[in-house]
Length: 290
Length: 175
Image 1 (cartoon, chains in turn brown, orange):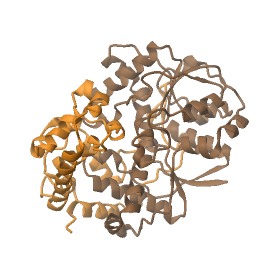
Image 2: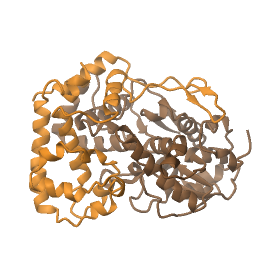
Image 3: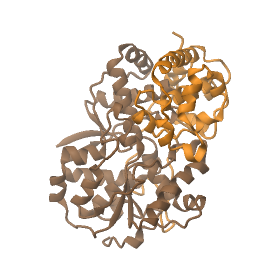
Image 4: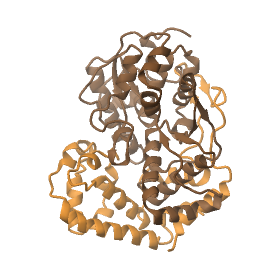
């Protein structure tokens, strides 16, 4: 059995409950134990524009909490995963910065030593658990949906920091989807940004970015749009109608988290995967079951 | 400890500002050597078409030392942090990182922070997270909370006072 500290971040545990529910349901089926720890805070990445020292300190603080328990960290949010990975990269090779950040952490009795590794859900499913194992566990192969995938920028860039998937042609989500019987199809806009980070200061522009991508997805006749990032999902799912208005289009694209679709194929009930929480029109997929 | 300290609208964050300035000056030298204005960054920039951000021009201005002008400009706040320019720059200049520094300097110089950043910062200072735990609405218009959905209590700093003390030190750090 593999054990990880679940690092929830901010967006997932304060509003994107479907992601948290589906991650908590799916991973234990593959012999992964998720441990809840007290005391985590924001990873700091959304505030990088304000103060980078703050970002670095907050990330180091969260890693230190996991280190105290001797656990590696699972970060389902790509932005958190990037912040934590970047923090580890900087502090492990810059002793001066390491010392400086650790001075801040003293107050809470924490110390960053660099023992905890950081992993993302996709990495865990694709590289650690493996496609074969996923295939074995499929109970309910899904219909041959025509699927558009969306990785989210922070999952694959910048590769200098060490990202879970390739920066120009990631195929991990596609491989997982093929394993559960659905049909991912490449499209030119696959790696386009959702614009979600602009929500803080230019919300209209953020919605336009979201709308532009979804409009192209709809025009190309996809049945469903699969994402993994709580920031992206908030844009594509909860804000879909508003995003459509910014590009004068009526958008009706079902948007699901990868772990939700995976969970369904593994025979987990709809309730447990939070399928009633998606605000995009997923009912038209006729996913069946309870 | 208040938000004013961390953004230094009240007091100048001298040390932090000096540090960013030094990094920018160092970058200015390095960039003069490296960036040859191929504009690969701008051609792929996610914010280019929509908001007219042109990363290669930002770098060109930095080369000429026009740091204050950029710090006072709104254009630095249009970056979506997609890191494409970081990934694709053939000379490893990474305009997105330069933009982060410029924005940091704008904040540390006491220039107003745009939009919701103030609220996000305030929220992290007071409770450790970007926003409060929300109750949400399902497609059928039912309200749900974390406990309704069988999720455990949220993880957040256990001692807010100590957490704030730590953050306040970042704000007033003197070396």
